[in-house]
Amino acid sequence: MSTARVDYIAPWWTYWLHNFPHINLRFQPVDNSFQPEEENYQQSLIFLGCVAAAGLGLNLLCLAVYLSCLCCCRREEEEESKKPGSCCVTWSAVAAGLITCVAVGVGFYGNSETNDGVYQLTYSLYNANHTLGGVESLVSGTMGSMRSGLHQHLARLDEIFATRGDYVQTLQFMQQMADNVIKQLLGLPDWDKANVDLASVAQQTASVEYYRWLTYLLLLIVDLIICLLACLGLAKQSRWLLTTMMVFGVLTLVLSWTSLGADLAAAVGTSDFCVSPDKFLLSQTKGLVGTDIVHYYLYCNQTLSNPYQQPLTIFQRSLTTMQIQIQGLLQFAVPLFPTAERDLLGIQHLLNSSEASLHQLTALLDCRGLNKDYLDAMVGVCYDGVEGVLYLCLFSCLAACAFTVMLCAIPRAWRQIACREQDYDDIDEEDPFNPRARRIGSQNPNLTNMHSFCSYSSSLGSQNSLQPPAPPPAVSNTAPMSEYMNQAALFGGTPRYENVPLIGRGSPPPSIYSQHYRNRYSPTMRATYLSMTEEQRRQFGNDFQA
Image (tube, one colour):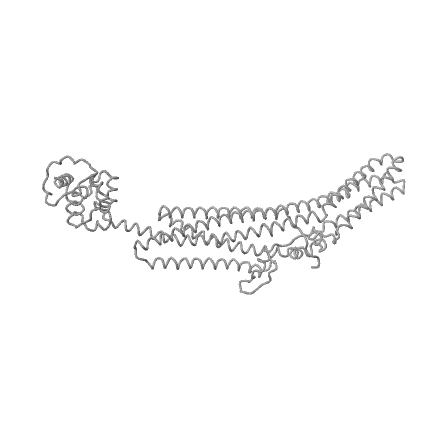
């Protein structure tokens, strides 16, 4: 192509995407020229989607291996091993949340950019369709007035001027000029054979873009909600919420890889078009519209002449000649044939309206209007559109990474929660020193109020002594150290002087609640205490204090 491109320059990212390997499904390289009707080219775009599908399979395989190792390689449930795991889960959740927030932000920007580019494309298509529709309307209106209106006026004037041969000869000359004008107008809309309704194309494009934009908007919102609910499940340690979010996380991971494949194929295909759009348009209009006409509107250079200049010039000259003839007849024939004045004025009005249509037609057929629409459409598609699709590809990658991290963190958190609940369930429900039993007793008043064994000082030799209970001693923060020493010795512990204020209230030292001291109580002590009634326990404590 000899003419250099000066108005439109493809952006660098379209060349980068255009240089992507184009391989068909038989793993054979194909030409990277934009040929959407070619089967090999279609397969090269499908191959990019298959690459994304392979990435999804590899991602799921890595997750499956990780989960298998997590289930098979169980570590010892020690406090030293639990704390690093909790820290790892926490940082993984923080990383997944941050990556998801960044991905959603990038996705919103890319979705908006793509929508702006497609909107600019549809707006340009509507403008171009309006221009072509205006040209068609002016041409059809002028031809209709020449064929019907002018023919009727000339037929009536031919009857009026039947006695004057020179006037009849002038009318015949005007009829020839009118036929010449119609002939030039017939050759004007040379794109008649290219039956492309740009308005319909723009409407379909806008409809597809609306559903695409809405789909991505919902996907972005769903990604954000799943991440927030997963973080909430980790904070509340809710296993059912984590399990649900894990299922939705896998589905979102599949959607992320699917959108990545679709966006990558769309970006590469659009970039192939943006690198050389004129080549594709020339191939599509070959045999339908003249090559000189396509060149004129694609490049709109001063070196290119208007292909419609000659018919428009002939049109202008024919109208001027006819107006001169009408002026002569009005000046010389009307005094002799007054009845001819009405038809002559009608022809003059018709020629004036045709001249106004000629000026409008000249402006619409100028290359600047359609070339501007073409350039706006290319900028919208190749700059905003492709750039937005690239941001959507980045969003898909970030979302896939975020949900991969989240799917790795949730099973670890789920296992830690299960281990904690298992340790909690191992505590004896009938143990009076179990804080859980104390909470259950306080929540259910119908159960027997089992006081802690530490709440009463006693000796094993006074179990059969059932005397009325004595008034409780006054509470004092300076309880005798001997009483505390007796309690500590009874339970096998060592005195802890910081817990002295608790003795007067009948409460055990905090260390009694630990697993270490609970395991020191003999079965005989527990059985003896549990077999006593409430009244016996009170008397038991009073006897010990006495």
